[in-house]
Length: 462
Image 1: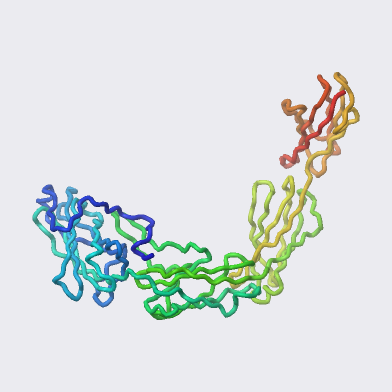
Image 2: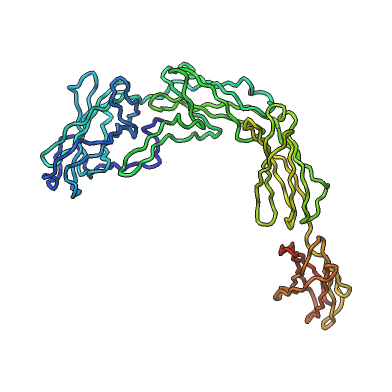
């Protein structure tokens, strides 16, 4: 795919209205305006080059879009005008092709397409533009110079790495050095690469008044790098997107028109460099602050010191959170956490080294049962007893500290909340109005307002 053939972030719509291969005149409504030479000239949504020795290389298999902003001396109206575009081979200025865009709006880009059959692959051309208003025409613009290149590089690049060979498990901790080579394609001027197989699209934003805003792809080192010479090579130093496991870098060569070669890849493997996570006590108490010690992988620390950790808490109150913790000089760090997930909580911890390496995640987790215990002498759990009109007492006991109240419901009736007593327990009386199967649902709430897990208690009334 070439620069000219790719999708763009925003494209000006050309359509077929108002285009012809003849020197058409503008609408009569513009007859009294004096046309001015078009400005803001672009070709293939890239900048116009007025230097014949440095033409813009462009893909043009579907023709070449050219554009400029027409103007007139009439600053009070907005009458439509035409824009005439003329193109010729640099080696033969007599062989001109003219395309006219009618019904163009002064002050806005007017796009026309130079036909593909007028453009030969590998040949250089000059083109220019003029504004036409009625029977009057402006001066021609200075020529823009382009070279047509609609052929992709003939070979895929070669990829090698001196520090992460492909067929073994490599010790992680330092950026991967890649050498990309054009592999004999002498028109290659750079490379595009990504850790994803779908490489980014090279595109152009369209700004106010339809003016393209081209950017040099090589200004983004996340995905592009120039070759050291046409047909040459480039060296990259990249940190993989994840700290361990199979990795693949996808690469293609680019020529001066940003035509891309076929995509190739380099795969390798990286062993785990995850840190260790150790709580101050083996089983931290629910809701009680506990200190965790984070330690770097020893081999990783020897390559580049760990400078920070990212601690993600999963399952706690308020949703998942990420906390960044600075490391000490020896690469260790401490963090105090109060784990309050009503079913438990999970930690994912990665470390970051001074050279930018981010490890795979270490995992640590704990499960909590925060449901209350329910007991009844008259109506035992999963058993039968009592009878219609026979009251029974149900006692709630917490499994965690800090319980302030209990909320319960019999057989789906409206909920009732009762405070916890001196020992954080509570008892309620209930008299059945019918025999058979019944159930009780109850949950506790802590002093800090956390609603703990609910418990279902099933029993049968005789």
